[in-house]
Length: 587
Image (cartoon, rainbow, N blue to C red; front, top):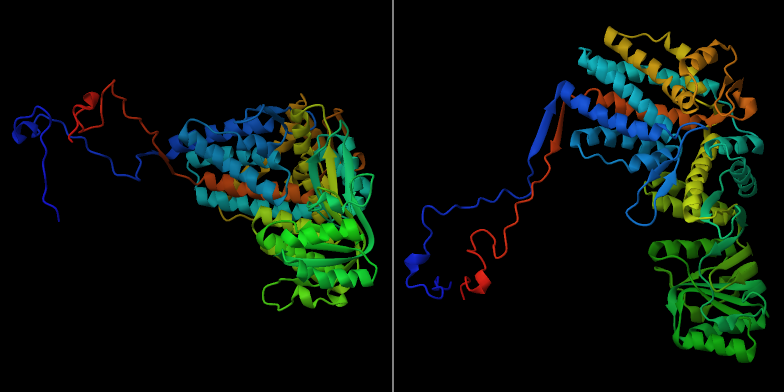
């Protein structure tokens, strides 16, 4: 260990002159990783959180119903966004007051969870959550036991869910699918018809994606067969003058997980395809070097019908997609780990076969694969099982795309508009409509406009409760069930109490209020319907979080950090004695 050395500053006569005197202040550093907290209790904590719930719910609730308004959102990049999507609005709410923000964030979680499960109904969930939380806070503050109130709320919700199942009717016709989509898209019939035709084409469980279009009109493109976003490696493979494409009929498919660089490894495959007088499509991780040169030279000089394409995706996703192609075409995958299968030993049975292939510079389409139907069905079932097990939305999306390519194909909705803001607003509505339609196919439909929840009020009369506090919980749900219908009428400029009284006066459960036209109609016949799953999920998620919020007796938040005051010019860090033009430092 080196001895401790002390150095004199320039102009310093002795070490004693540099010793700190008793008058010098020492700076004590706070413990790292710990921030001071602020704690609030009882009614004060609940009151602040309720303020946050109200602010968020007010911003979201204005979008509810056919006459709901849009909300303009500032974005950190790009222009402002205009939307009517409840969960998108909720995600943009971030309040300065920490305790208000806690309340707002809890209701955000309700909207997010409903969106994940049902894909729609986030505004309804937010309105229900606010109604339950507000009443819950009120009764707990006046002395009700919060745990018993929560039990009463949960008992009431269970009864309402059962009643919703009784009211539900299955979706059977394309017209009903169009009606569900139209209502969810804010009454836009063109979107409803577009989604209905897409579902009719690719099947009710087929994959439908939404993209920005390049025109002013909305279009539906249906992609059948195995299509992926990789084109030919070299333009020298092009065999059609029109459209810059490579097109072959009745072709062999060679699949490899590994990169192909050695020309000799491809010679047996080329010889087999020439003997059979059939085109050859090579799909591999990559094809380069002398292998690519050989293919291009033989294509141009020898007239061999061949095209090389890079495999789509990355990592495990690429391997899975190549395996899908192998099963769909009836071929084998070379270079697969654990299999001693070499390209040099290829035989005719190792090739996959397709009826038609089309390759552009951007994508490849394989049609009429000759794979065994039973193997394809087994592969589809395996992918369905993986979809059920995975929790990642990204993985679920990729698995659904793979499933669609193997089964019914993919429907692509291309949305047009005059500007990016207009297209983005429409895209939010289409995604909601798409999710609502899938939910309707899954669990059926109920009368819309908040009427289904009103029809569940009578089922609460027979609930047996153990005490008065549980009875209060049932009463909270009773009042909350009216909240969505009241908000829809309010947004339409009507008198909510009068409208609700008239709806409840009808014996036919399908009779309700058409807020767009201001008339009382048969909602199911008119096409004003909601997916049962959306209504059910919104109620369950809202009641779970909001009733739990009412049980809170304390709230703890971090205090805002106070930045230390900045020193003037020449001021250094504590204990450094000032920079002083570098003259104050020891060297």
